[in-house]
Length: 126
Image (cartoon, rainbow, N blue to C red; front, side, top):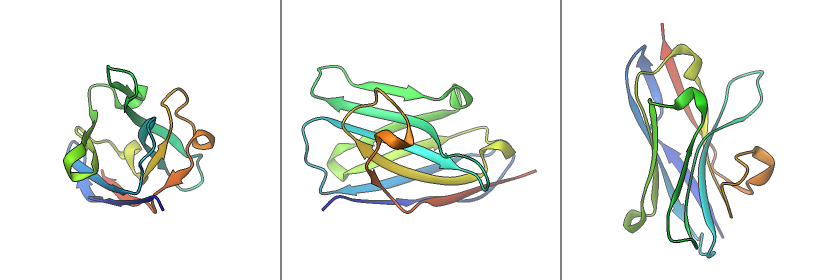
């Protein structure tokens, strides 16, 4: 059974930083894609970042346009933990952030990912 558990959300001031964590268990398949999504009330869930580390030799990292230069996705394989480092936070970043898993990052779309965490709330104050 695959489980993803997010943590690290909270209230942060404009321009501040947060690091979200996602502990992953039971995800043993060869092709691995780990992603972060976010969803604000009344809005669609959108892809934030994606990381793939196999089976190709070179890992692949995707960051959505709104996160370029501000967000970084990474994985500590030994700790089974995925991270999302968020800097220079804006009010537009306020949302529930979800960790998700699939086989590839070819489509960072909600419909492409089939394992999900329960989310962690990020609120950026003005």
